[in-house]
Image 1 (cartoon, rainbow, N blue to C red):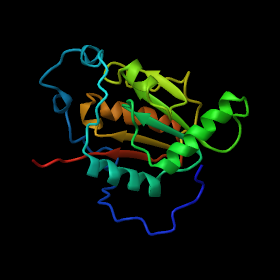
Image 2: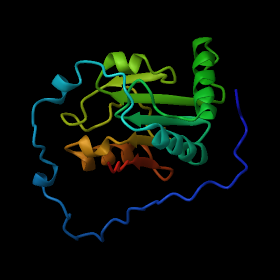
Image 3: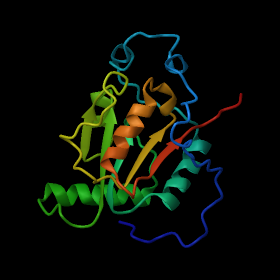
Length: 196
């Protein structure tokens, strides 16, 4: 297991911090902003597993580098809209797998990285080897994180890769995440713009 911290300077990524508008300012979006062209239930689409990557190899490599420099090696990370692969770099995968093995031996209180995955397809979540906890939930019908799986104030980071735009209630989902984190809250919402 790799426990080293990267010594090289992290690459510069185009980070766009969100500055909330002052209280009393109208929200810039309406409910129609989140209306989809196809309003059929998401459960229909996600009933069949899709063991594919949704971004190309170059995007995966950059994502792994970003994660390597920005995600904790210990604690608890929630992977929203998770699937069979979370695109974490080997150092984080090793930390998660080590914690998982120690937990299975009932030594689970030690250092390591606990990964929670929330997604819509059981077979895909079951195939993800780094997940300790798998949560099946449609965030478009229930945008609140389940308290039965996530201890209060226990998330050290949340990731959501190329999926926030599929949520019809993203503000409610993000507020729900915020309830599980107080001052330490760090959500990583990563989008990929492929130009063909």
